[in-house]
Length: 226
Image 1 (cartoon, rainbow, N blue to C red):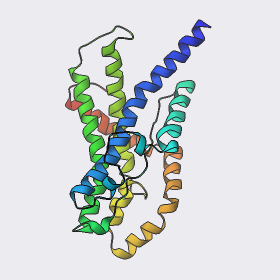
Image 2: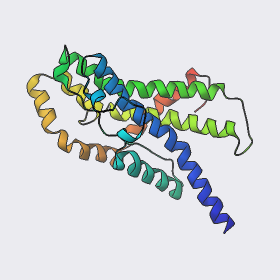
Image 3: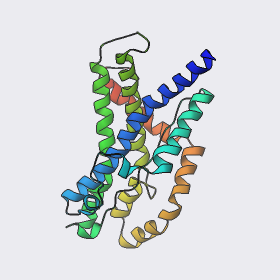
């Protein structure tokens, strides 16, 4: 019974170490979209109460809780390296309110992934600043593990969201840059884009191949080894 209890406790701790930076990454990603839109003249997100760090308005039961939780639990139970991604409720944006809709839509689209890359960089700096500790269960070790998780989570979200597939940010970026006829086609296929995204995640290692060099670069910049 004690061993089982220890296993449960370790699993809960493992999920918490990843869940905290994941929740922060997803929420700040969406807030960044809304904040940039607000600066560029669209107050829609603010009027819907989405320019807040309170997680409740941003939580999507499927994308913020169920999918990341199942991925983490499966990796823990199977002993595999976790691949975690998720999403929050999309921040409402009205491009008609922008002074320059095409340009401003691009800026709004890249705001989320750029924020995740910034958070990944800050997490590496935190990790580099922590004192060395080998004491199991210590605060320093816990913070270090959370910082490492934050680097990976934020890099995955940044790279994943920049794939040029709607409804991801990369797809919206591409839609903003394409000629009107092609942009209209991209909007039409956005409804099935999520299926394409799932196929990419489940059947290929594309995201992993793109994420690893970015993570290695961030660690090298801080004089650390990934």
